[in-house]
Image (cartoon, rainbow, N blue to C red):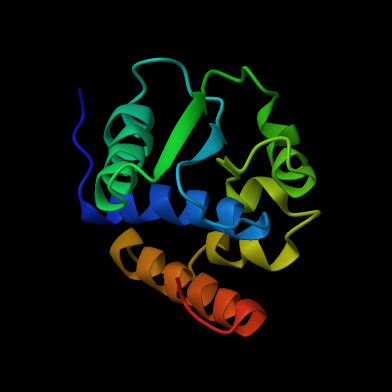
Length: 142
């Protein structure tokens, strides 16, 4: 199994945050959120990203936030993930920003060739951009 470094987890987490931020959510006692992606069982993003993140959130909320996980495209294809989050079919979905250029046109800017010399520069810059966009829409950075 490949172990993700901090920036890889940040990138995986950023994709989940983007998708989760698009769905209206109110944290109530013992909330269960539906999480969906298209990764097969045993994929390193699932094992070291998604599962780790879900376990940590559940731990840090003392069990008030739990997750129902639908992997391997059980809820739909990668192309459908953005609309499933928007429509509330799932609460959180893996939405690669560059994959959804038609619905998130500025999200693909970070993939332009030559923009960054290393992913260690580009990933934090992309995260900062997403955080500022989120702040401008909801008034705070979560």
